[in-house]
Length: 112
Image: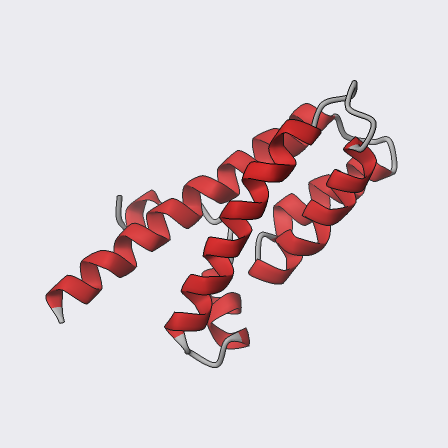
């Protein structure tokens, strides 16, 4: 995966700017987001009693990493205007972009 595989689900320029260009911080923040997403994903089910809390948490975390579309989808879900399936789809898109970005950064580090 490379820059061409990044769909725009995450605004990495925003995140890089917020981290003042410190890529170690960017990597750490994205790793934490991915770890947390693994915990949230099972809760994004209408039968789970904590699904509303999970959507709210994902919304804030998404906006923090620059996944603004995911944050908007979560906001619409909280308002009853979007399904949990939409949240899961947007979360998957953000995670795919993060994986592509991480791969690109790993390739850059190999090139020196």
